[in-house]
Length: 551
Image (cartoon, rainbow, N blue to C red; front, side, top):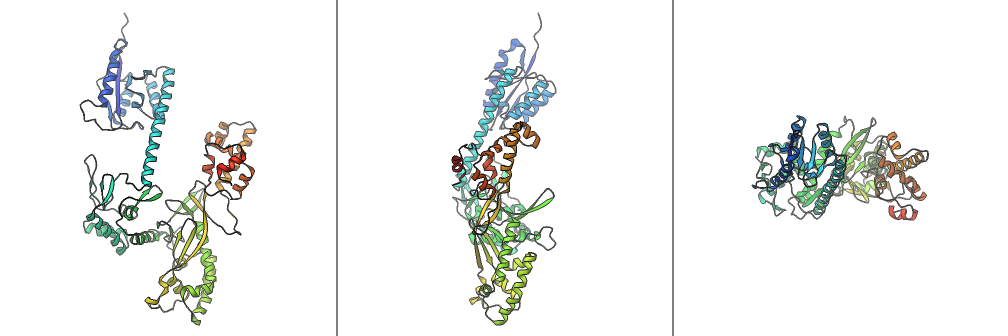
């Protein structure tokens, strides 16, 4: 009688959380017991359970980076395992891509895979097909769960709720709510006020260290001590810009009103943000800077946060922009606009007299000479040293731009020898504000903004990414008519064929919609990304107009 070949079975178990693992009979034990019983039922086939335990407690199935999983794979590589046994397929992994890698490893080392409750065996093609389908649903379930968690998190933040994480200095957590810790709140106020006095985060860091003021000490749910160390510069920058301290909650790019009390008043907060912006951009705006930014430290969003000067290199060219959590502004667009406004202001001499409050003949004569000269300089080559003397702040609102003119700075520029007026009657302390109605038009991926005036004589600007998408659609549609398919077009142009399929639909847009896009008259908020990714594009032109907002 022919001897039965022994098949070494490795039982693998996993649990996503470590809850309950300290119990004598936990989920991992239950899984292992079921798998061992199944292996025993196959003793007549030569199955024998290996004594080595491959247990991952408290590890997600979304990654293979698990201790027991790595040990299992090493033992497979060594040829010590013939069959891998699990309670359910998703105990091994919830990722279809990771499962494909595991099956490849199993096949290469002639290792079978068995799920006890689903009775699958990867040695057969039908078993592999069924497992792939099952893993697809397991991955889908995982992604849907993650989406639900993200949506819940976002909705809670919009209501101003604290959603966990490291508690900020000045607050304690009480029933998942932020409650002011008065002793720490005093430290927070001192830190903000001390920064305004020292005007330097580095000096503030050394001052706090000398005063033995440290970061918040707290204990995790697992009982581990955290914090209580000296502040770093990065931690101080984060703290000084954290809207938590003015009673708000940040979620990604948006800031919502919180359900907790503020520690810092809005006036102090605004002064700190202004100083941070001014100091942060100082090194970018020196005369010898490689890429000086005209409005660095002067440009603010209506939420009082500054736009930060940034640049990127593409195809050898440098593109400048101002960065804010909500969106970016093209540096060229906003710099040109502000320079034009200042040039225009310097040409309106009667308005200048009123702004800086001068009436003497000598002062009027000085303005008549110096204002046109500075206007010509700005027109020929924008100078930051002139701009920072004239402008106090530029505030970007949803539908308008407000330019705060520094009256005293303008006076000193145009009439250097002017005598300062008595403070009690001095109107120069209050900035003169110029407002202009504008629209901020989304472009490309919805991040870069183009400033376009609403005056009748101004022509709207076409969105380059929208025009490119429509041009691509017509070109690819012609390729289809010539005999190519989606896959061939995608391979030729180095792009995903799904993008090709979605984009080609734009070739069937109503003619008036296409014309509106090419002339920059599309509805506000319509981007190439939203247009290409629209789930269904109606074939009826009237339905298209309703769907896309063309009224």
